[in-house]
Length: 164
Image 1 (cartoon, rainbow, N blue to C red):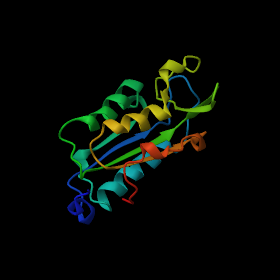
Image 2: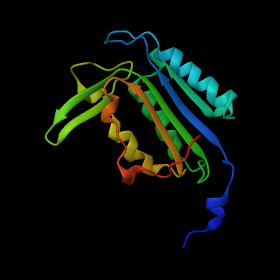
Image 3: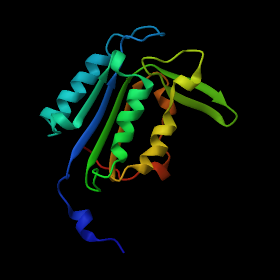
Image 4: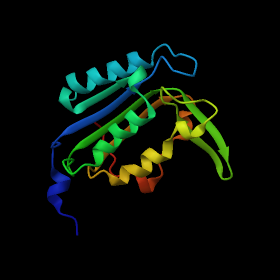
């Protein structure tokens, strides 16, 4: 039986975000607005949604390496993340699609990706599957990348649907 106290809570204990924007790629064509979009998203979260600035990690351009992105994402799996925290993940940058034996697979392209080495990309569903390791029941992913239509979230990955 569910404890009704969790359903009636009207606030979040903590609000945390990972914001990624990449205009200048090491090995890919540049983009024009990804960093602006990321910075604007960061400002909206802090100014309008009450996210503490210290809880918002913003990785722009050369900071947005594969290693840094994954490290920042897995930071959400630590024990200090509570059940009633809200987590927001935003990516603005290049995406890539590959056709696998069961259909198309979407990837995010970090700053340091090598375009002919897919092991340097971040597979979209790796992030959504690894969200299962995050204790917070409020997790929202927003992706602004080419081929982003390949990033549907499977119902088993949805923790809780709720607007910010």
